[in-house]
Image (cartoon, rainbow, N blue to C red):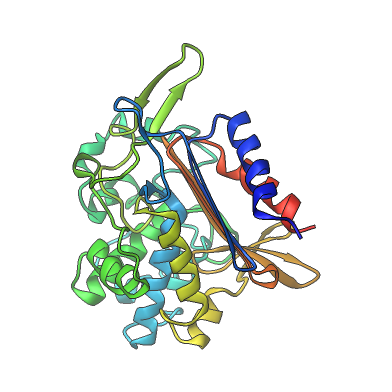
Amino acid sequence: MMGNSELNNIITNIGDKIDFSGVVHVKHNGDVTNLSFGYADRSEKRLNNMDTRFGIASGCKLFTAIGISQLVERGLINFETRLVDCLDLEFQNFDKEITIHHLLTHTSGIPDYFDEEKMSDYEDLWKDYPVYQINTLKDFLPLFQAEPMNFKPGDSFHYNNAGYILLGLILEEQTGMPFTEYIEKEVFFKCNMLDSGYFSLDQLPENTAKGYIDNHKDNTWRTNIYSIPKKGGSDGGAFTTAADMIKLWESLFNFKLLNEETTMKMLKPHVHVNGEIHYGYGVWMNKRMQQIYKYHVMGYDPGVSFRSSIYPESNLKMVIPSNIESGPFDITKKIEEVLLK
């Protein structure tokens, strides 16, 4: 069995090699490995540490799926409830048969406000629609509300941020609470995730990493404050620590957030994406020999990259948040190579 010091050396070597900025938190068979790299604030030379809060971009679609699943348990909606029956907004070009299940699994066919196959740079989105105008979930609607469908609901998997905006709006309408307030109260608080929240970029709390966009051509950098919405919502943008994300996974798998039946519905491979990769409700999963060996979430924004995975059969959990645009994928693959032999 690999010792902690050996794993530390392997992670440190790859972290240094790729000039990583962030933290690596690995929990394996009771052993915990914690390593931090780079600066949370480059101007002030403030280092990242294990208590640093990082933006996790789309990594928090899982939180949205948990919130929606809680509403199902309360009987307010069910997974087959149609969009037109649970959200009082007009979508004249949307198929009337779109359900919550379709939105959760990226199979709704609705247009996205940021389609990764059509646009390569998320920042380009805000040239015509200033990012500072995005203050609520409804502020996203003009970006996709009147556009035509891409395909019939259920016909295909196409990763879709707008679908998760709609899920957040459904949650707000059904509970009468702002989305971020609901998730902080009903998910973070219940997991004892005391350092996590949906923070505004112009009001970040202490020990929060700024997101950095590097220009490798001339070795300059800038922060991401003008490159992403100033406050996260149901499609992404929460801040969390590595330790808090572990608490989320453990609470989910120990049925502290949802009952066992609903949890297993969330963690079921509802859609085959490609190869061994499937998608449930807000979570990716990998299958081998008809067995799920890995559940994971990921997030990428300008100045943000994030990966977190749990491997139930291997008693392994890892959280790798970063305040630059790459690194967690490479480190995840390396740890898998050495611990999942």
